[in-house]
Length: 384
Image 1 (cartoon, rainbow, N blue to C red):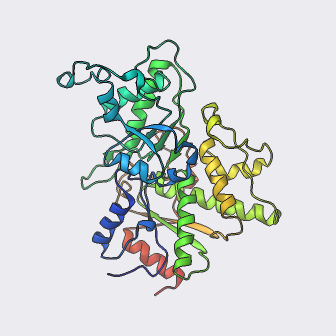
Image 2 (image 1 turned 90 degrees about the horizontal axis):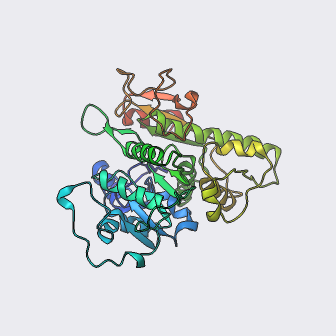
């Protein structure tokens, strides 16, 4: 089987399968050996969130969720399906599925300490109900509602894509739509805003930090001393391109700061949500506001992990820049303004917590498809 000659990663917002399975699929589709370490799923960076690995977590999505969660380090995992089985009185949406309550052992069920949204579920109504129950009861869904706890228990979400492209001509609803529904329900019921402890997957900066780290490791194994330019190829201006350009902004600021502070570690000042406080290992510095700008729009937990990565890779030479290449085979098409870049339309397809800078949705290059994108990279790098 053919092998890659240049360091290559596949960064996807899919979260319903194991990395090994996705690597196998890519190998079959491309006719080139794709290793597990060349795949970054939306949930892959969660392996760095060690402060949650021993917590009892509720996971939502589809596919082998328990296996996925355990594979990235979580030891105490309950799915929404298991929660519905353990608390038969919670799921009342489908009248055909209503069950008489057995002899309950609900009071012995260990408290849910965090919720992780891996991706959109097959049936939305039950997970929406059960996640609301867990948030409103501080992780004890059998308890009576006395006072609504706020801040609520931590919620971590992977893959914020509102839309994604399948074989159909129109984009399909993605996990961002499920998140939007949950946020709306929580706001309507409590009058308060649902807060995320971490948002992971493109365009979150932590995904690109994680990808850069894996790319550097892969380069070393291939005998490549240093990657000067990272090329991000994608079909969505508000996730792929925005994330790539955001990471390029970080690289430029880091280079600028290192020019002024040769012997000083890059530190991060973070204002964390109160819900994050118990899960951060140390207090954030209050100085160096300029450093903070490198990590705009990321949560306290994300910042903590980014800081750890920075310290782990101290002395490792990072890429000089990250160039974005938009392909016209997905949600973006040149014939429609449904999804565009640098537009003045009022709606934004990005997540609520990401304030889109239109300049970051503008790609460095636009090409018809991935093949043309690869040709462009080879031409720019004079690679044959």
